[in-house]
Image (cartoon, rainbow over all chains, first blue to last red):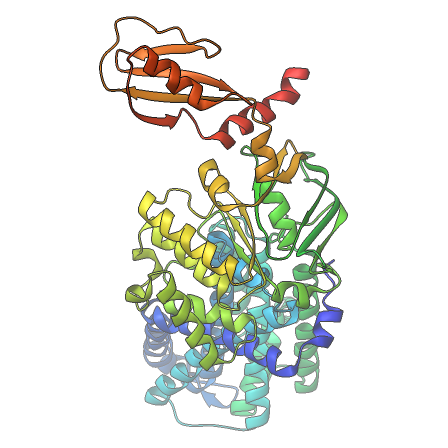
Length: 267
Length: 308
């Protein structure tokens, strides 16, 4: 394992900050440069969700959790956009740099692994939040403004985007080809999101399905976010927040460990 | 003086069992222009990879300016610039951004990073392209961009892994001039190349690596002195009907106006001209049949396999 301890001590905080800002700037510049691929599709997707599920179908469903169906699905749809984009940003950026070997320019530099990880995760969070803000603005065209608890709302959206940026990072480390970076989003992430209560309350499910839903981490994220915006949730908010923080810590530790071992990066 | 790089008993065995390095030891002094030569797969890039921490060693040690690359990561990497064999920058990034970003990774503040990027892009003739995406550059320009990127933090040791591969002769020679200039200014340079005339004209010291082992490690001058025979090709002013016999010098007639003469170490080349003049044979021009270092390279790397 590469020992950064001595070097890291010698580094001044200004150096670390410069390296971090450089990496974040590069990541943000990347997704802004290809905005047609990164920012436009989620906007179109979410607008279609609002029109079809919220307006056309939602009007026949009636109320859910004390709110109109449109209002009920807004937090879940925003969370879905944030999760997907945070994940997609890191997995595609890191893997393409690994594939092109341009990641070597970072690996030969003195930037410590912690900063590399933080830089990519911040890039993912930035894109996730960027899309989240756009999705929120679009939702205003279809639904009224609600904000039950701004602190919970901001904290949940931040932690969720960090968790899925870390997920994208871990996926990219293990990926050997471009197929490998689409398998997890298609076969794991999407089912978990759709079954995590974006479009329904788990109370409407049979008992066994409700139990299964509690093993889905995205279920807690969506409900915690919904609590922050609407004040309604299918789970205890303290439990949801605790799980989210635990997941963040565990995934950060796993991703950092993989970087230190050089998995998929150093031969 | 502390060596710029000190490699001791370096071993590398890859996961597939391939032993790329079998205990190489090497020292490169500060200020040197050093050639690390070897055939494809000999272990040059693995050695560079270990120095750059892109490849993990199996055993042994590497020190850069007296500091271990594993225990003093920050200090050693600040002193090190790597020009890789493969083009490895992001093709869709702008030329200027590639250099500025790299400078940022080494902690240079934004203003200084931009100044350095501009300085080295100017010096390497890339400034006109600074606002274009790297993918539009020609092959030679991409190689020069790799050099500019490696220099933005002004390392004391620059390692170039085949920096002129596929580059046209004009661009190659201007790259040589640039490298000689920064070497004169104090940067230690380690060069791997398959163009042996490049190594011969640039480098003062040399190591040859074969199948993961160092087979030669000496000064260029001493190495060239070990060459026992040189072959010269003479272009004649007038055609010859038969091969002239020169006392002490084996001669081959390549065609009616071209002779090949073998000159042993210690023999006087003037004697060849004297004997030719005596036979009324006049020489228009003369050149080495092959690069001297190339002759040695081929003979040295043949030896082990011949012995087996």
